[in-house]
Length: 179
Image (cartoon, rainbow, N blue to C red):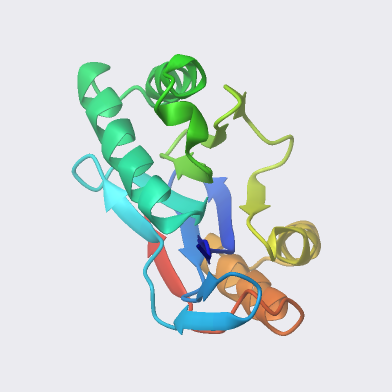
């Protein structure tokens, strides 16, 4: 059976009042077929105080986002504690270990990547990108963040546009959420 994948997510934090996360809209089945062009892979959660985006298997990512929202509720909105708790559960739960997805989560203070191997990664700089076009989006965000005065949203949109012009698994139907 072919696997569905959803890719590329980019997030930028310029400061507490300037945080954005975006994703392209392409869902690819296997190596050869585009199944959807307008998927939304980023959203505001926890009363609009947290941004979340996913790359990887679509169904797995939806399950993880739902579990992460529950962890945020359990930890009173503490992003780091919720992320660590989700990563711990993801790594140790037999059923969750097979989930194939990565998440980026952000609030006014933090930007984190959560993986199924139990990793919670805080990037060295205030931007990150994941997914098939993640390296392209990351390189573009790096240049734009460090050499322009663009806002977080502008950087996310341009980095994803650049990735979509290079990566066959990334399209230019970009959705951005911001705090």
